[in-house]
Length: 429
Image 1: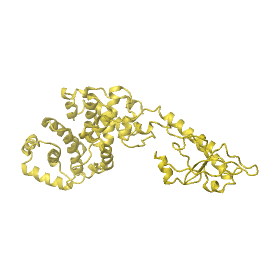
Image 2: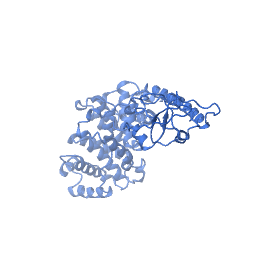
Image 3: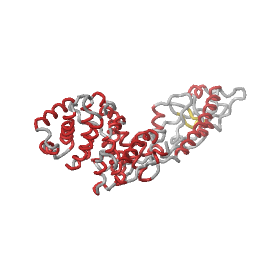
Image 4: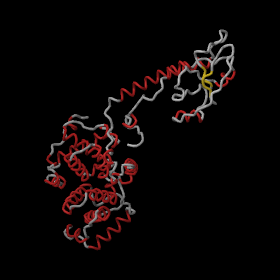
């Protein structure tokens, strides 16, 4: 992935881990090169030059003068753009100090030729500088040790590396898309107790409606996105609009019609939806409810549903077909249950995949790559996961068996018969 990004627990992306410490200069080498400036040469003291042993590495490893800001010339040198300066010969005095390099920023004096006067001590600022560099040197070693310790952690896999040439994968800004989804998913959520404001319907009726719509969705062979958007439209509409129970099925049929118009290429006609409702409503009633619903929702159909997060998180989990189907089975069980509305769509998706992995492997599987892309740790998923395990356990015994019947077919790999991860509940983790 482009750019560096620090993750949930301080783990650095692989792009930042490479070459840690390889380009650091040895501070002990710089420390050896700094000694007190000669008191008999005001020019050198005024410039506060850095002394350096005779070598030809000055152009490759420039030394930044002590207590001097980095100038443009030095910045250019640090960037690899060497600048050649003309050398000036300085006439040696009685001390025979030879000047090997001179620039606009400092004078480089050979340490071997420098002999400080016996009557002059090393200036205080040089002593402080040496002490400071020793402390920095110790800190540098500690940082290197921390980097080495961090290498033992499981790396975060770049799940988009294989899609660089796929324009449909939009790898350049896929992370930005899902960051936006996470920020805006709250707009697609409803209050988990909104049914208290309804006077003629209850949560049980909602469950019956959605379970029936899952069967309708399966019969019409609609896209997966359509089902999740249908449920979202129903909840958002019921959260603000009182509905009598005899109109509840009309709300569900109309929500599916709107979702089909938004997601599908080939949209079922209104007469087909009326027929599937056993002709309980006429065409005008469906069209009138469509107008009421779309205006109540202010034409906002572009919302992140659990399906959008499921696709990204399954890619992070490097899932196979069985894990994918079992994850969708678990999350569809959650769509029917009113109590699951208290979890945001991204958490539902992540918890469904985590629960499915646990069911298939028999252990708590959630690696750093999954945690990075979902932004959820195992601890954050456990409450939702335990509820999903209970739903999975009861799926074949309850009256609302639309989801279980759907995923008990060959088309869906019979994943409904997979044993639930009961150890998540029993362990009390």
